[in-house]
Image (cartoon, rainbow over all chains, first blue to last red; front, side, top):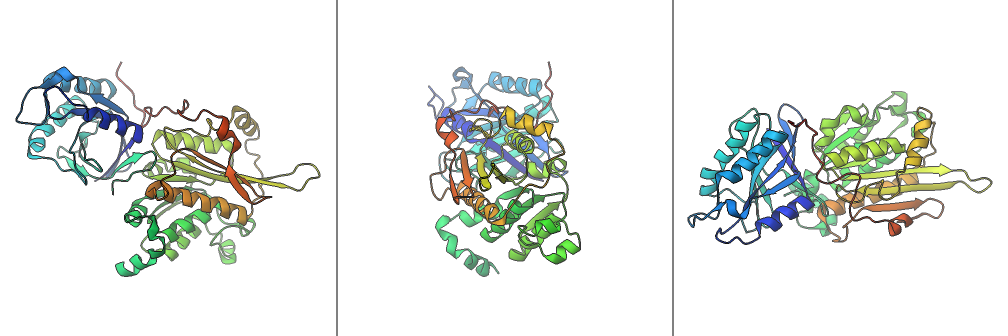
Length: 166
Length: 272
């Protein structure tokens, strides 16, 4: 399976700006980013992310064992959007260093069930996890035909300059 | 082999440490493999691009030999497809290149084009350009357009004019910069099917194609650190000059109202 993800520089900038805002008690912020997909062939998918959904300040739970924990309301809002638009939804957060970011143990345990919630709402959409570092991107994608998350670093940021995550 | 490949690009190492890796992984689409597209295909292969989607429904004819890079008399005699000639040129320069040739109009291979990182348009007509730009914007693909024409103005010598445009999603489009207007689209609509044989010459195609390739390299490597907005260059073939189009000075180019940046991706039906 080959999965390619595109988003505009404008959207990337909005995501980073929001994720970098300090929160009253959470150590970091998370958000959701959505968009439709095109199935280019039996094994090729193109996902174009086009909208950012920040998590409201009051949807964070105070928990000092993790960087950020959000409540069911934040997840339900994202699920509702998937239900209404049939677009895919990606959980997004940033690891503040250079290079291709990887999921932490907490991420691996806690984010895939959130992605499964989106899949439960609409099995035809492509959902997943988008990870940012200060310089690069990584994504884990749930395709309609598979329950397992597929990793892709084939992510491009369209704008000046064109960024191809290499 | 790898050492040989590394040596091949040593003269363009000023583009940056990662430049060759980026170039080799960038998938390019070329629509139209005539005078402009054949130049672009050849140059992209020389620079080190490895992923090509090339589309043109035509076969090479005698009338193309004045400008079709790579074409031979034998190709004309055998009625060879333009995409096969371009494919042979690319593979001759870089045997490792992956070339996907399609001898159909671009509208018949949309999925292959959606996967491209940059699309070059080397076609005739305003309506086609409008449609390719709309498609590129929808799927967040930078579109680089080149074209030229020769005009007769009374008793004056013929005027050779052309353009090279970079249309970047989210930035000014070809409507914003005044290249596409209701007037020129309507005029062309009334002449549908009567385009005739436009005058074309290799040296003008070469100037525009080389500029387009240079722009694409800058776009993906950012080597010049100066490419930060829509580019509209006008070519004057009588004075051999290529300059920023005057209309760029007088237009508000900050936000494109024709293709909102959030209205991108495959359209789908929403529940109501």
